[in-house]
Length: 481
Image 1: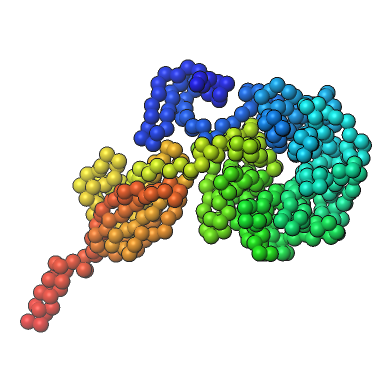
Image 2 (image 1 turned 90 degrees about the vertical axis):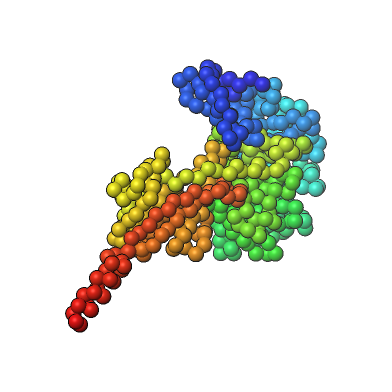
């Protein structure tokens, strides 16, 4: 295997290579800095690899197993680069939002200007009623009867197998505006995601659910049914799950990007991948319902080139391989090869500093000497210097964003305090005595490291020292005498 600038390297001139204790491979370049090889758990394909665009909005597999990519700005292309279809070849618009393969092996794509059908890589003409050139088609679904349901900017439309078209406008009694995702339930109901919440169509009546019914946000982006029939709903502000007729809400983090969920994709192991504006989140439905923290956050440190994922741009091929459209190219993941979550390495933890009253402090007069890390050895403090802050860090070269810490101060804390991502600990109004500060680190829910420690002593005030009691006793005795 050869890696050059075409595979993402900033320079072809490599001076040196090194493998660290965590197994990461580093390269030193000629003027382009140090590089870390992130492995091939996630591989991103771009226009440099033959794609017609980096903005992939949908992936469809044809009858031969070839992948067809609908892009935001350059039409449709086959992933191997051997076929490309644009407006010059009959597309109504080069912005593609969605795609499916029907039972007759024809490919259907939704564009900014209606529907298009491809057969053997060629655009086939459609009657004007079916083409719907005045509508933006955002989602597609074929039902058991061969009807093709189209989620549009203005509601819902269905192209029936007999060639007729029926429209359901986005009124108060309809599906709502911008129907972005469509799924079927076990009873044959059609669930849809729109700007006006999530809803279901039973063939006669539309029923919609919003924040008033427990949904975390009424702007719904994507839908997915898991293996147990539960409906997962990705919104602009969190994830909801419909369980036994009620909604449960999950938020992956406090930032907006992590909760803007644009795609939900299942894999062959029953897990769900959530694409957000802050990377991918991976979880098993049962585990997340039992513990809202049971999920993996996949970011740049895992090999992603871009953290923003496109709306409903997820797909799985017949081999169980996953594809995700991002703002920086098409992300490929082989779930069979990487079915187990990699074990996070144990980080190295170090206490890096001790401060008094939040200020950097010169401890040379209060200690015997300084260690190689600049920490005081044999630190003895006056009783008035009882507000201390300990700085520490955990070194994880593989996954630095997920490092957590636990600490305790022997002589003050009864046990280890709860895990935190803060890299300092402060204690105020410490009484006199001997103390030992300890801190350990872990990556995510991985094993904890051996603790690093720092010992010190706070002297009592003069009125609590032995010589003061002796002097006071002698004074009292002398006064009585």
